[in-house]
Amino acid sequence: RPPKIPELSSPSVCMRDPQRVEEIIKTMQKAGTSTIQVISDFDMTLTRFAYNGKRCPTSHNILDNSKLISEECKAQLKDLLNTYYPIEIDSKRTAEEKLPLMVEWWTKAHTLLVQQRIRKDLLQDVVKESDAMLREGYQLFFDHLQEHSIPLLIFSAGLGDVLEEVIRQAGVFHPNVNVFSNYMDFDETGVLKAFKGELIHIYNKKEGALLNTGHFQELKSRHNVLLLGDSLGDLTMADGVHSMENILKIGFLNDKVEERKTSYLNAYDIVLVKDETMEVPNALLLHLTSTK
Ligand SMILES: Nc1ccn([C@@H]2O[C@H](COP(=O)(O)O)[C@@H](O)[C@H]2O)c(=O)n1
Ligand SMILES: [Mg+2]
Image 1 (cartoon, protein in one colour):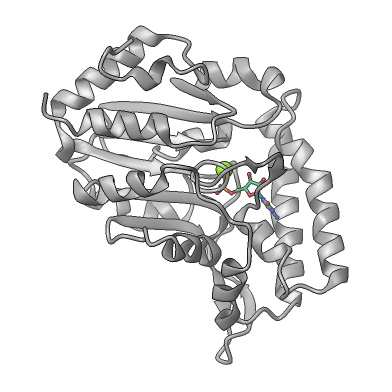
Image 2 (tube, protein in one colour):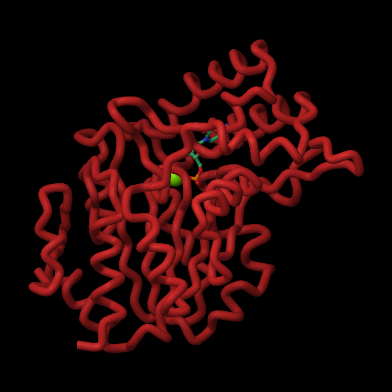
């Protein structure tokens, strides 16, 4: 294990191949800060999964539980969550089996949200009044990337308008941050009428809008990627990166740990088990941006 990163010896850290991790870190550190980009999922990756034993909300949940949603609609959204979330984290079903069901979940939820005639000008209050919580250490994470001019792409199947507000209110929506997500389309009076563009769900985080935006085109010289996710669907988030040289994949394993540990260890280089902090990603970033 890299001796300069004691956080990698924390009990929450699991690695299938620590030597390989060490090699990737060494190569990336040698290549230098100007070659690095960070691609991160949002819900349950940059935000906490639980706090004081209670689940923290996803960007969808922030809106679902808010004053902008009728009691009847809240119950319908909750039913959807109770039906589809167990499918999302079911280790016995394949991604192919889950994909159409996930599309069904997102589509039904978005249809319900549009029926609620949500007002754009109230989203700020909704986030302020919510239990949204970024992971401990988020400030250092965002500020350090900004200080070192490292681009951060947040690639989320959540609600872009809501998640942007979360990071704005936390004071970390710096100019190096780019967000790809599901954005709301409001009519001329500021009422939600639809969702923009192609739906982003947990199993298409490489297709659609993102590949045509030129985002990765602009970052052509950044061949070294630090990827952060909490779902196996997050692993394809860097697929658009041009001539990638190294990728270090960090996965937060928040729920159903025993059932899912093997698949996470096979897919992610570093697995953080029930770790609600940014300690390990931060330690890695500090190391990668150090010149020693
Ligand atoms: N109606 C929905 C649909 C999805 N979710 C959760 O959002 C997560 C996706 O957002 P990422 O930032 O992680 O891409 C996903 O894991 C679902 O559990 C939801 O809460 N409500
Ligand atoms: Mg997530």
